[in-house]
Image 1 (cartoon, one colour):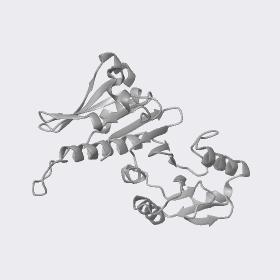
Image 2 (cartoon, rainbow, N blue to C red; image 1 turned 90 degrees about the vertical axis):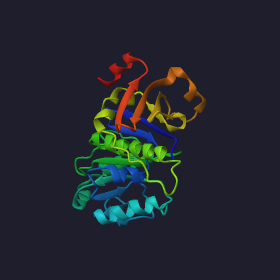
Image 3 (cartoon, rainbow, N blue to C red; image 1 turned 45 degrees about the vertical axis):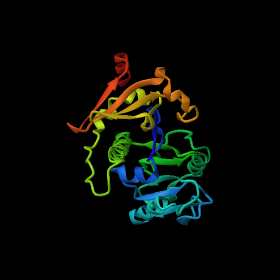
Image 4 (cartoon, rainbow, N blue to C red; image 1 turned 135 degrees about the horizontal axis):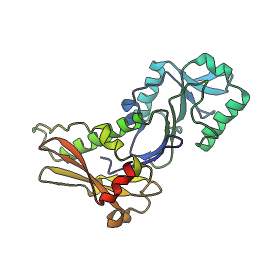
Length: 257
């Protein structure tokens, strides 16, 4: 079970840096399923060659689905980096400057201008980084909140049922509401870590500490015990099946405005 989920949201570019969210979690959580993918690795062994851009593409939702299935089964070992697009015909309309911008984007994993291209009509740009870290650009940030809600709900379900016997029925967990995560928009912009490693489960209350952490949060794990970094708890009440947030300092509520 994942012990930590890191989140940092840049609301200027709609880029989300996160750890603990797999490509499978991403694909299963989004609403706007990609119709086609342009792979931003020119040397990719996957997909079919597109002559105008010189890159590989995946055409059609079935091909995209098979790609994510291969990722979930670890059958693709190359770096995952792609941008979705709506109409294959529009790839032919890309100018040399736009293609070079896409190549730069794929190489540097950061945009020169907007991460959303008019001709591609893309909703996402996806980059796997080192150490279970990803950077994903979302046209609609609500997509990420849904993914995160699903992930945290699943982790709580695993934690609550961790020591259940094979013959005992598992305890269900109500889904975390997106609106509760949206209240945390301010601290997401600072960079936070949901730490299941130090979560407690007493009196039917599962309390997951939330730490304010820079730089993806996993390089100095001893700081997780530093009370100055603890900003809130995400709480799941197993009796009422309700989620809530408990801020350590009420002044932190200004972050959500």
